[in-house]
Length: 277
Image (cartoon, rainbow, N blue to C red; front, side):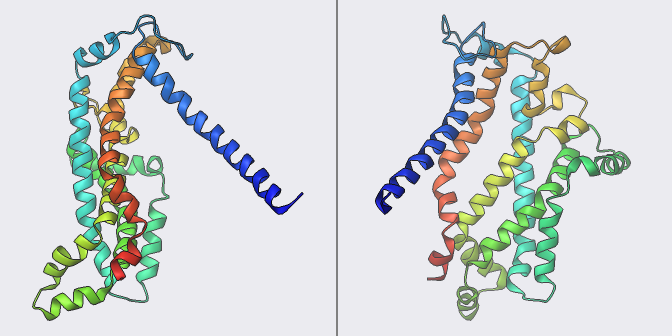
């Protein structure tokens, strides 16, 4: 077999497996779309007869469902804001002040992201009881922020490393303070990385189910990730069309976020040459 034939043979199998992976991701999405417009949907993929928006109407009119999306937005936006602010403040000294402990601190932050939240939930739950933050959105926000921040700092530090310190020094020569150089020089240059970290933080907070489910008992405070649990009836009974419709509405904000931030996120992986050039 010639070299050209080997390349074609290898390319064929590569694209074949990529096609299989694409189908595996496409089929669940197809089920969601078709089932959300099907009043008699089940676990199989079938064409709606007839097409109906009855499932969406039920989700919108059911008590607490729309409020759940509002709660999710409050939690996700708050966690993202806290994690971003702390990440910038913490990653700056790790990136700009080179010490013998800097790399160890970065690795320690990365290690903290590997700790499962379930392993620390009992001690954390007792701590929040002492601060009267059980069944409180504030308690959920603070706990989720604490879990999100370590990896956020690690990401932000790596993006910050791609911006040459010479650019900040030039701003200092022109009379700018360190804070002004961060706001007007550093952050604009690492904006793609900042958007990448922000998107990661928001999606992680938006999709978190475990912490709100454990921390909250008032249904009016449930975020959308927990509200889907309310669509399951006694003995596991579930109306799949309503679950599919709810899932479609649930992923819309994430889709919009990805749509508007994809250019920044793609640039975030190519920051080094652009910033230092």
